[in-house]
Amino acid sequence: MTGHQLLAGFAGLRKGLRQWMQMNMPAGDGGMTVPRATLLLGLTLKNEPAGMSELGESLGMSPRNMTVLVDGLEKEGLVRRVSHPHDRRIKLVELTEAGTRVAQQELAPSHAAAAALFDDFTPEERAELLRLLTKVGDSLRARGIETPSHPQD
Image (cartoon, rainbow, N blue to C red; front, side, top):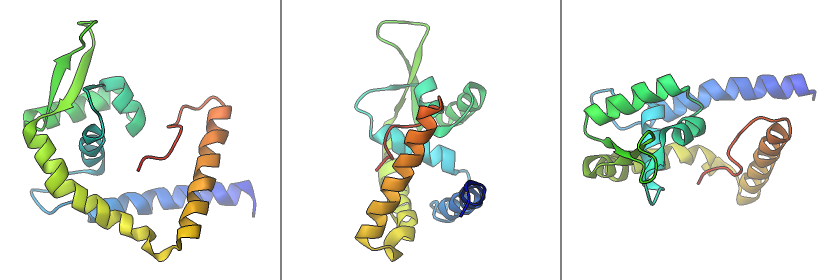
């Protein structure tokens, strides 16, 4: 198998994984998207408000798109912007009580259902896949591409 074939395989999986995640989003008004859900779930893992640039990098979003995403969630009362404690120019994002409720009661079960995609793998296969994905990330970072240093749980 060549590097070209592997790259094509990753590209094909990207679309399929996104569709799978969207299929497992909670039913509702249709306003929940993978980036919105990812941001809300990611904020549940933070012990303190997070910077917009940090959040945007983890989602692979431009600052402009990140602003639009946070604007929408803020308008719905799911997140709020707060000032950085040491630099007023920096705005941080945190979950509201409503956002925490949505993340825990609606998104967490949907995320678990989406993760069931890997139930067909043995524990050894999951460990090997995670090892290989980590190696791909290491390879990207060695070439100057910023990626998370470890896959998120």
